[in-house]
Length: 115
Image (cartoon, rainbow, N blue to C red):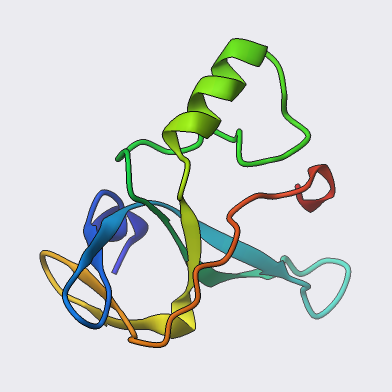
């Protein structure tokens, strides 16, 4: 599977209720074995937006505030957006991603230090 297989795909909860669309993915960079080796990217979760199918374009970082009108518009469009951990994904099917019944909706924001 590649990331583009998940982007824009509808996301449902364990009861079949539509939660939104997958607009992005969150990864963490794990350190390499030594100073020369590059680290591995590990998928942490999916960003699910109930209102739009577009990404945050980097404005999920709380330190990004300029240009002000664009930052405010994107934050309003993404109200209700959440991070669903990859471990809470129950199934990835050709037409839909299904979350486990006990999934937790985490805040998708990143602080300026998380870059």
